[in-house]
Length: 90
Image (cartoon, rainbow, N blue to C red; front, side, top):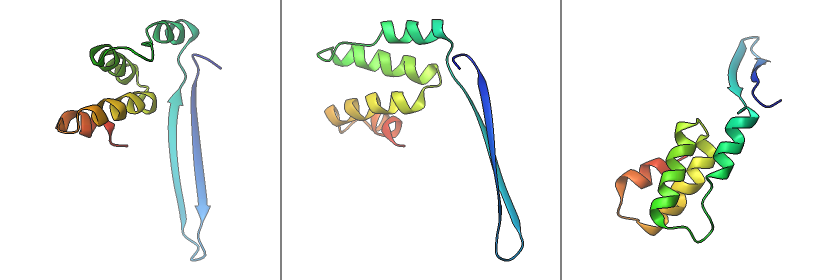
């Protein structure tokens, strides 16, 4: 559900008898936050600076995967920009 925090964990028993586990958490934007971010999404033909600002907004909202899509596009347009290349890395 929107606005909720979730967590998960995995536990594996190896053939040696050792147990390994991992866990992580994530949360979903609430409806107000999601609408605000969607309303600011730039048009397909938006300027470089508009897309840069939107990528920053996504990044600051914790939406790393969505931001990375924009960072990659921006980095492709400016391949000599080390910062954009770093931001576009998975």
